[in-house]
Length: 363
Ligand code: NAD
Image (tube, rainbow, N blue to C red; front, top):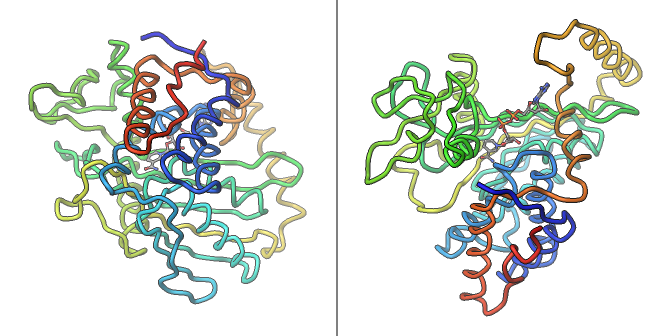
């Protein structure tokens, strides 16, 4: 599959204009473009502009709702329960995080639940919103769409790729951002391997009978055949973390956990999130913390390298490296580019306006 390079600024403008054409207000369109292009910039193409065709399908099916604001369900000062009202995740989550940060500034901590957000994308983006305000944040998220991950010991998919994220600001240094799916690899990475005709690493997949396999096609069966499943990362450890993401992200926030009765929409990916946001300055360690991080980082980076490794990175470093590499242009594979052109054509047919095919910007 061939790869095209799209100028980063042009891609941002195209995404912004697409959502303006679909009916988003200026804020929502800008935040959606910031977030999706930001995910590509960070190297997470599985959560970048390639999600737009799915969002457009969800919007056309009246599942994703544009220009929604969060509503406050329960407000106990440092405990805040919000409903995203099926709004664009990039917009309602920004609003929810801004409220949580404001409360953490006032009270030292805010435990914020956000339910019923449309796909809120790369969760690290929300941790970065908190770290930019000097806050530590911890996020548990569940995913309400077709189950694709098998529970440890199970041979059928029962839940989603439930991400877990922690952001930590460091004085005079970039923040640390741990941000990953609890599946061994993201489904987007299985799709890339499938398109390239290559195998995935061992331990990532089982086939429809529950037998471990490296063949990505088990996730994209033809002619109504049964689908395989992703496995959790780290065997039982990733699985139990995913269970906590499901229960804290959804059950505690009043969102739905995943089961047949709650999977009522065809195209939407819904997320529910619990975020614990707190001000580390209130723990009285703000002067020593930065020094501890720096000396610990020096210590771990002084380890002799294993064969095949170029260096030792801290959480968030690979994303910063990618942002430097992709500042001018972002690679988009030809399959994704065709889907994005198609998404623009769909917006054009419904609204009578669109930014036109993205492929016009491709080199
Ligand atoms: P991943 O496997 O690339 O892991 C990323 C994390 O590991 C980051 O914290 C990164 O800094 C760190 N990391 C990566 N390589 C490293 C190295 N060599 N040394 C040190 N640290 C390293 O991420 P993933 O599991 O593919 O998840 C990708 C994105 O998908 C995340 O942003 C996640 O939030 C998002 N996601 C979202 C949803 C949703 O429903 N909204 C669901 C699943 C995943």
